[in-house]
Image: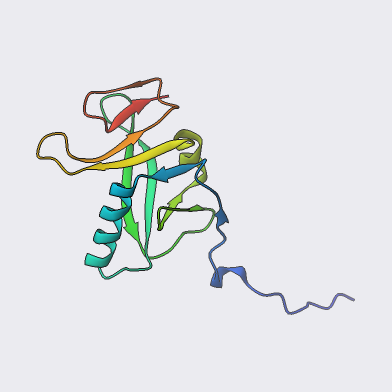
Length: 129
């Protein structure tokens, strides 16, 4: 006879892993901008999601989003005072990347310096690996 034990359901806590800045890191200006955006949205404890999706002029592009917390299977990196989450598939493409923010009228915004990009387009938002 088998007796079922009281197993705790792990769905109450997201099952994410903790990584380090070897995966992705933010420059001080990028961190300042992300913190400002999180506070503006009323999410002071939120996270920045960095993902790689198909599309763009070079085949792959970055997608960034502010969220409340990590999702299941995410990798969480704390860098420059910001919590950044990356899904396992995107982690294959962004490992070693640095996220910067340029406050300029032309060519301003978030820029990713990615050592894995074989080619990147002039807009800096698309790459191939």
